[in-house]
Length: 339
Image (cartoon, rainbow, N blue to C red):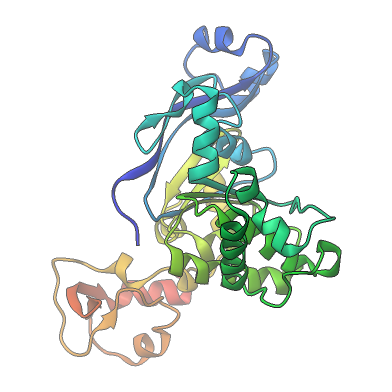
Protein backbone atom coordinates (compact mmCIF):
# COMPACT_ATOMS: atom_id res chain seq x y z
CA UNK A 1 0.00 0.00 0.00
CA UNK A 2 1.44 3.37 -1.01
CA UNK A 3 0.48 6.94 -0.18
CA UNK A 4 0.79 10.06 -2.29
CA UNK A 5 3.27 11.67 0.09
CA UNK A 6 6.77 11.53 -1.45
CA UNK A 7 9.40 10.20 0.90
CA UNK A 8 12.13 10.91 -1.64
CA UNK A 9 11.86 13.85 -4.03
CA UNK A 10 14.59 14.18 -6.64
CA UNK A 11 14.48 17.22 -8.96
CA UNK A 12 16.76 17.91 -11.93
CA UNK A 13 19.62 15.96 -10.37
CA UNK A 14 23.01 15.74 -12.06
CA UNK A 15 26.07 13.79 -11.01
CA UNK A 16 29.06 14.58 -13.20
CA UNK A 17 32.49 13.04 -12.68
CA UNK A 18 35.53 15.01 -13.77
CA UNK A 19 37.56 18.11 -12.96
CA UNK A 20 35.41 20.98 -11.60
CA UNK A 21 32.07 19.32 -12.45
CA UNK A 22 30.04 22.19 -10.94
CA UNK A 23 31.79 24.70 -13.19
CA UNK A 24 31.27 22.49 -16.20
CA UNK A 25 27.56 22.00 -15.43
CA UNK A 26 27.04 25.76 -14.99
CA UNK A 27 28.20 26.29 -18.59
CA UNK A 28 26.57 23.19 -20.08
CA UNK A 29 24.28 24.15 -22.98
CA UNK A 30 20.89 22.41 -23.31
CA UNK A 31 20.72 19.27 -25.40
CA UNK A 32 24.19 17.89 -24.71
CA UNK A 33 24.05 14.10 -24.87
CA UNK A 34 25.91 11.57 -22.73
CA UNK A 35 28.43 11.10 -25.57
CA UNK A 36 28.85 14.86 -26.00
CA UNK A 37 29.64 15.22 -22.30
CA UNK A 38 32.09 12.32 -22.44
CA UNK A 39 33.82 13.95 -25.43
CA UNK A 40 34.32 17.00 -23.20
CA UNK A 41 36.24 14.81 -20.74
CA UNK A 42 33.46 14.20 -18.21
CA UNK A 43 31.17 11.32 -17.26
CA UNK A 44 27.49 12.06 -16.59
CA UNK A 45 26.57 9.39 -14.05
CA UNK A 46 23.14 11.00 -13.59
CA UNK A 47 21.64 13.40 -16.14
CA UNK A 48 18.85 15.77 -15.14
CA UNK A 49 16.76 13.17 -13.29
CA UNK A 50 13.49 14.12 -11.61
CA UNK A 51 11.64 11.36 -9.77
CA UNK A 52 9.65 10.82 -6.58
CA UNK A 53 9.23 7.77 -4.36
CA UNK A 54 6.01 7.56 -2.35
CA UNK A 55 5.65 6.17 1.15
CA UNK A 56 5.27 2.39 1.06
CA UNK A 57 6.15 2.20 -2.64
CA UNK A 58 8.60 -0.20 -4.22
CA UNK A 59 10.36 1.65 -7.02
CA UNK A 60 12.60 -0.58 -9.12
CA UNK A 61 15.38 1.19 -11.00
CA UNK A 62 16.70 -0.88 -13.86
CA UNK A 63 19.07 -0.61 -16.77
CA UNK A 64 22.17 -2.17 -18.24
CA UNK A 65 25.60 -1.91 -16.63
CA UNK A 66 26.76 1.72 -16.68
CA UNK A 67 23.25 3.13 -17.06
CA UNK A 68 23.52 5.16 -13.83
CA UNK A 69 21.12 3.24 -11.61
CA UNK A 70 23.54 2.60 -8.74
CA UNK A 71 24.90 6.16 -8.98
CA UNK A 72 21.38 7.57 -8.68
CA UNK A 73 20.59 5.54 -5.57
CA UNK A 74 23.88 6.60 -3.97
CA UNK A 75 22.78 10.17 -4.61
CA UNK A 76 19.49 9.46 -2.78
CA UNK A 77 21.46 8.65 0.38
CA UNK A 78 24.18 11.24 -0.35
CA UNK A 79 26.86 8.61 -0.60
CA UNK A 80 27.57 10.67 -3.74
CA UNK A 81 27.49 14.47 -3.58
CA UNK A 82 25.32 15.64 -6.46
CA UNK A 83 26.59 18.19 -8.98
CA UNK A 84 23.26 19.93 -9.46
CA UNK A 85 19.57 19.73 -8.56
CA UNK A 86 17.89 18.91 -5.25
CA UNK A 87 17.10 15.78 -3.24
CA UNK A 88 14.69 15.84 -0.33
CA UNK A 89 13.98 13.02 2.13
CA UNK A 90 10.76 13.55 4.10
CA UNK A 91 10.83 17.18 2.99
CA UNK A 92 14.39 17.73 4.22
CA UNK A 93 17.08 18.88 1.77
CA UNK A 94 19.74 16.26 2.43
CA UNK A 95 22.42 18.25 0.58
CA UNK A 96 22.11 20.94 3.26
CA UNK A 97 22.54 18.56 6.20
CA UNK A 98 25.71 18.78 8.29
CA UNK A 99 27.71 15.55 8.36
CA UNK A 100 26.53 14.56 11.85
CA UNK A 101 22.84 14.92 10.91
CA UNK A 102 23.42 13.07 7.64
CA UNK A 103 25.00 10.15 9.52
CA UNK A 104 22.04 10.09 11.90
CA UNK A 105 19.62 10.08 8.95
CA UNK A 106 21.38 7.09 7.41
CA UNK A 107 21.60 5.22 10.72
CA UNK A 108 18.00 5.76 11.75
CA UNK A 109 15.99 5.99 8.54
CA UNK A 110 17.89 4.13 5.83
CA UNK A 111 18.71 0.46 5.38
CA UNK A 112 21.04 -0.69 2.61
CA UNK A 113 21.66 -4.12 1.06
CA UNK A 114 24.24 -4.65 -1.66
CA UNK A 115 25.15 -7.43 -4.07
CA UNK A 116 28.24 -8.35 -2.06
CA UNK A 117 26.79 -9.34 1.29
CA UNK A 118 29.54 -7.62 3.33
CA UNK A 119 29.16 -9.99 6.29
CA UNK A 120 31.78 -10.02 9.01
CA UNK A 121 33.38 -13.49 8.60
CA UNK A 122 34.46 -13.94 12.24
CA UNK A 123 31.06 -13.00 13.68
CA UNK A 124 28.04 -15.26 13.95
CA UNK A 125 24.71 -14.64 12.26
CA UNK A 126 23.39 -13.11 15.47
CA UNK A 127 26.44 -10.87 15.85
CA UNK A 128 26.30 -9.78 12.20
CA UNK A 129 22.64 -8.83 12.46
CA UNK A 130 23.16 -6.98 15.75
CA UNK A 131 26.23 -5.12 14.47
CA UNK A 132 24.49 -1.88 13.31
CA UNK A 133 22.69 -1.72 16.67
CA UNK A 134 26.04 -2.10 18.41
CA UNK A 135 27.38 0.81 16.32
CA UNK A 136 24.36 2.81 17.42
CA UNK A 137 25.29 2.16 21.06
CA UNK A 138 22.17 0.17 21.87
CA UNK A 139 22.01 -1.95 25.03
CA UNK A 140 23.40 -5.48 24.60
CA UNK A 141 20.18 -7.23 25.63
CA UNK A 142 17.99 -4.95 23.51
CA UNK A 143 20.09 -5.48 20.40
CA UNK A 144 20.12 -9.26 20.95
CA UNK A 145 16.31 -9.31 21.22
CA UNK A 146 15.93 -7.20 18.09
CA UNK A 147 18.45 -9.32 16.17
CA UNK A 148 16.62 -12.53 17.12
CA UNK A 149 13.34 -10.95 16.00
CA UNK A 150 14.56 -10.13 12.49
CA UNK A 151 16.46 -13.42 12.16
CA UNK A 152 13.12 -15.16 12.70
CA UNK A 153 11.47 -12.80 10.23
CA UNK A 154 13.83 -13.83 7.41
CA UNK A 155 13.58 -17.54 8.21
CA UNK A 156 16.98 -18.19 9.81
CA UNK A 157 15.88 -19.53 13.18
CA UNK A 158 18.29 -22.09 14.68
CA UNK A 159 21.18 -20.65 12.66
CA UNK A 160 21.92 -17.77 15.01
CA UNK A 161 25.32 -19.20 16.01
CA UNK A 162 26.43 -20.15 12.48
CA UNK A 163 29.28 -18.28 10.83
CA UNK A 164 28.86 -16.91 7.27
CA UNK A 165 31.09 -19.65 5.80
CA UNK A 166 28.61 -22.24 7.11
CA UNK A 167 25.70 -20.72 5.18
CA UNK A 168 24.54 -21.01 1.58
CA UNK A 169 24.53 -17.95 -0.68
CA UNK A 170 20.80 -17.47 -0.18
CA UNK A 171 21.15 -17.75 3.59
CA UNK A 172 23.99 -15.21 3.58
CA UNK A 173 21.76 -12.83 1.64
CA UNK A 174 19.05 -13.29 4.27
CA UNK A 175 21.57 -12.29 6.93
CA UNK A 176 22.33 -9.13 4.96
CA UNK A 177 18.62 -8.35 4.70
CA UNK A 178 18.09 -9.04 8.41
CA UNK A 179 20.99 -6.77 9.32
CA UNK A 180 19.55 -3.89 7.30
CA UNK A 181 16.10 -4.47 8.86
CA UNK A 182 17.47 -4.52 12.41
CA UNK A 183 17.54 -0.72 12.57
CA UNK A 184 13.88 -0.58 11.44
CA UNK A 185 14.55 1.73 8.50
CA UNK A 186 11.80 3.80 6.91
CA UNK A 187 13.61 3.63 3.56
CA UNK A 188 15.30 0.53 2.18
CA UNK A 189 17.88 0.67 -0.63
CA UNK A 190 18.75 -2.63 -2.32
CA UNK A 191 21.43 -2.67 -5.03
CA UNK A 192 21.12 -5.88 -7.09
CA UNK A 193 20.87 -7.96 -3.91
CA UNK A 194 20.01 -11.23 -5.68
CA UNK A 195 22.16 -11.07 -8.81
CA UNK A 196 24.93 -13.30 -7.38
CA UNK A 197 22.48 -16.10 -6.58
CA UNK A 198 21.58 -19.04 -8.80
CA UNK A 199 18.14 -18.85 -10.51
CA UNK A 200 16.28 -21.14 -8.08
CA UNK A 201 17.56 -19.39 -4.93
CA UNK A 202 16.98 -16.03 -6.61
CA UNK A 203 13.33 -16.89 -7.17
CA UNK A 204 13.00 -18.02 -3.56
CA UNK A 205 14.56 -14.77 -2.35
CA UNK A 206 12.15 -12.75 -4.49
CA UNK A 207 9.26 -14.66 -2.89
CA UNK A 208 10.71 -13.99 0.56
CA UNK A 209 11.22 -10.33 -0.27
CA UNK A 210 7.62 -9.92 -1.43
CA UNK A 211 6.45 -11.60 1.78
CA UNK A 212 8.51 -9.20 3.88
CA UNK A 213 7.23 -6.19 1.97
CA UNK A 214 3.64 -7.33 2.44
CA UNK A 215 4.27 -7.53 6.19
CA UNK A 216 6.40 -4.42 6.67
CA UNK A 217 5.27 -1.93 4.01
CA UNK A 218 8.69 -0.27 3.66
CA UNK A 219 9.54 2.45 1.15
CA UNK A 220 11.93 0.60 -1.15
CA UNK A 221 14.28 1.52 -3.98
CA UNK A 222 15.45 -1.71 -5.60
CA UNK A 223 18.12 -1.85 -8.32
CA UNK A 224 18.27 -4.62 -10.90
CA UNK A 225 19.35 -5.22 -14.49
CA UNK A 226 16.79 -8.05 -14.83
CA UNK A 227 13.52 -6.90 -16.41
CA UNK A 228 11.64 -10.04 -15.30
CA UNK A 229 12.69 -9.34 -11.71
CA UNK A 230 11.60 -5.71 -12.06
CA UNK A 231 8.19 -6.72 -13.39
CA UNK A 232 7.69 -9.17 -10.56
CA UNK A 233 8.61 -6.85 -7.71
CA UNK A 234 7.81 -3.28 -8.71
CA UNK A 235 4.97 -0.90 -8.02
CA UNK A 236 6.73 1.33 -10.57
CA UNK A 237 9.79 0.85 -12.76
CA UNK A 238 12.28 3.53 -13.79
CA UNK A 239 14.36 2.47 -16.79
CA UNK A 240 17.70 4.25 -17.13
CA UNK A 241 20.12 4.71 -20.01
CA UNK A 242 23.27 6.86 -20.08
CA UNK A 243 22.44 8.45 -16.74
CA UNK A 244 18.90 9.53 -17.69
CA UNK A 245 15.48 8.03 -16.95
CA UNK A 246 13.97 6.88 -20.24
CA UNK A 247 10.59 6.03 -18.72
CA UNK A 248 9.05 5.66 -15.27
CA UNK A 249 5.68 4.01 -14.78
CA UNK A 250 3.79 0.94 -13.62
CA UNK A 251 4.79 -2.41 -15.15
CA UNK A 252 1.45 -2.47 -17.02
CA UNK A 253 2.00 0.94 -18.59
CA UNK A 254 5.59 0.27 -19.55
CA UNK A 255 4.85 -3.00 -21.38
CA UNK A 256 1.76 -1.55 -23.08
CA UNK A 257 3.14 1.89 -23.89
CA UNK A 258 6.96 1.94 -24.11
CA UNK A 259 8.01 5.58 -24.40
CA UNK A 260 11.21 5.05 -26.41
CA UNK A 261 12.77 2.51 -28.72
CA UNK A 262 15.20 1.59 -25.95
CA UNK A 263 12.33 0.73 -23.58
CA UNK A 264 10.51 -1.14 -26.36
CA UNK A 265 13.49 -3.46 -26.74
CA UNK A 266 13.26 -4.34 -23.06
CA UNK A 267 9.58 -5.21 -23.40
CA UNK A 268 9.41 -6.96 -26.77
CA UNK A 269 10.06 -10.48 -25.43
CA UNK A 270 7.76 -10.11 -22.42
CA UNK A 271 4.49 -12.05 -22.27
CA UNK A 272 2.23 -9.06 -21.69
CA UNK A 273 -0.63 -11.28 -20.51
CA UNK A 274 1.42 -12.15 -17.40
CA UNK A 275 2.03 -8.47 -16.60
CA UNK A 276 -1.10 -6.54 -17.57
CA UNK A 277 -3.93 -6.50 -15.04
CA UNK A 278 -7.65 -6.02 -15.63
CA UNK A 279 -7.42 -2.64 -13.88
CA UNK A 280 -5.27 -1.10 -16.60
CA UNK A 281 -7.81 -2.00 -19.31
CA UNK A 282 -10.85 -0.89 -17.33
CA UNK A 283 -13.04 1.88 -18.72
CA UNK A 284 -14.15 3.65 -15.54
CA UNK A 285 -17.20 5.14 -17.27
CA UNK A 286 -18.47 1.80 -18.64
CA UNK A 287 -20.66 -0.88 -17.15
CA UNK A 288 -21.12 -4.54 -17.90
CA UNK A 289 -23.50 -7.37 -17.10
CA UNK A 290 -22.85 -10.63 -15.29
CA UNK A 291 -20.10 -11.86 -12.99
CA UNK A 292 -17.24 -9.37 -12.47
CA UNK A 293 -13.50 -9.98 -12.47
CA UNK A 294 -11.00 -8.63 -9.95
CA UNK A 295 -9.00 -5.55 -10.94
CA UNK A 296 -5.82 -7.22 -9.69
CA UNK A 297 -6.20 -10.30 -11.94
CA UNK A 298 -3.72 -10.63 -14.81
CA UNK A 299 -4.97 -11.23 -18.32
CA UNK A 300 -3.20 -14.60 -18.20
CA UNK A 301 -5.18 -15.58 -15.11
CA UNK A 302 -8.40 -14.60 -16.91
CA UNK A 303 -7.51 -16.50 -20.12
CA UNK A 304 -10.13 -19.25 -19.83
CA UNK A 305 -12.90 -16.79 -19.00
CA UNK A 306 -11.94 -14.47 -21.87
CA UNK A 307 -11.89 -17.26 -24.44
CA UNK A 308 -15.25 -18.72 -23.38
CA UNK A 309 -17.08 -15.47 -22.55
CA UNK A 310 -19.32 -13.70 -25.06
CA UNK A 311 -19.72 -10.31 -23.36
CA UNK A 312 -18.27 -7.22 -25.03
CA UNK A 313 -17.72 -5.51 -21.66
CA UNK A 314 -16.83 -7.42 -18.51
CA UNK A 315 -17.45 -5.66 -15.16
CA UNK A 316 -14.40 -5.11 -12.94
CA UNK A 317 -14.35 -4.82 -9.16
CA UNK A 318 -11.61 -3.70 -6.79
CA UNK A 319 -11.99 -5.31 -3.35
CA UNK A 320 -15.67 -5.87 -4.06
CA UNK A 321 -16.35 -2.33 -5.33
CA UNK A 322 -17.36 -1.84 -8.98
CA UNK A 323 -14.87 0.41 -10.79
CA UNK A 324 -15.99 0.04 -14.45
CA UNK A 325 -15.80 -2.55 -17.21
CA UNK A 326 -13.06 -4.09 -19.34
CA UNK A 327 -13.43 -4.49 -23.12
CA UNK A 328 -13.10 -8.22 -23.78
CA UNK A 329 -11.52 -7.65 -27.22
CA UNK A 330 -8.72 -5.51 -25.76
CA UNK A 331 -7.95 -8.24 -23.24
CA UNK A 332 -8.02 -10.94 -25.93
CA UNK A 333 -5.63 -8.91 -28.10
CA UNK A 334 -3.13 -8.90 -25.24
CA UNK A 335 -3.69 -12.61 -24.59
CA UNK A 336 -2.94 -13.63 -28.19
CA UNK A 337 -0.20 -11.05 -28.68
CA UNK A 338 -1.99 -8.88 -31.23
CA UNK A 339 -0.25 -5.58 -32.13
